[in-house]
Image 1: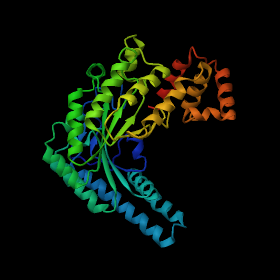
Image 2: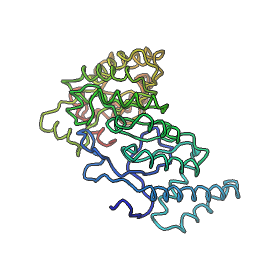
Image 3: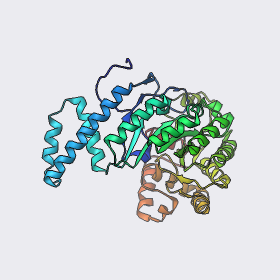
Image 4: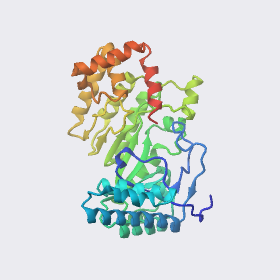
Length: 383
């Protein structure tokens, strides 16, 4: 698709879980790197920049829909939703996507906006500032504007340009650190080493922009599990991001890492190994004030969350409660967690839930000997 060709409103495929209520505005298409072996999201696609003019057309379209919806709600006090439905029915199919986006955002409070796709910061700083200025003029009450970015890209942006972007209204950047181990980063073809991650993270922080760094427990496999934990913690200790977000490795079928596993070149960690790795990682976080978040169903324990340093021991205790379970109880918890029935090990105190999961394990022949292979299959569905 040519950069200047407008084919209607666009939305990309993903956004962070923490941006579930955000209005999605697409600045770029797909991922400019697209070589990470653990990711299958953008495989088979081509990266392209959208023109500033076309992005502004999308913003204006969304703004128009939001104003129209707000006007109708004001007229009726929100009691005559059929009027909103008639507005939707009168639109062409592509415009309905924009209307749905505007309606969903209106219904959830209109507080945040997320800029898609995988690396919006690859745009020229001046173009990004122009877009941010327009967003702020159309949605002056928005409280947060966020984006994904690659460390490799951020490290090449001049500090004064980062400060311009911050002043224009970009409040938070999500970066996939994934690991602080150079061996792990090279193995998964991340396209950035530990030093680049640190440089980029500090550049974001120094510009006054909130920073979310993602870490992927299990990414080093069995062979590099300890190094992955220690080096990732060391990188983050040097950055002190606002948020450390956990996203446990899964192996979607279309990923190159899944192919490596099928060929016997990559040995994934069991849940017990990942729990021990996660414990080591959190224990090694030192001298920082980050907030740890576990906001994804892929994670073994959803409630391993807290503000460092004060809540570290509470997070470690939750991990320990899984590690010290009997093999039978661990199987029940693993299956129940990945089915969405458990959030943390203390949920095993719910006898009715435990009984339901036991029945599921028995009827499907799930034991401590095959549970991890079964879990790997379940986790593929969430990627």
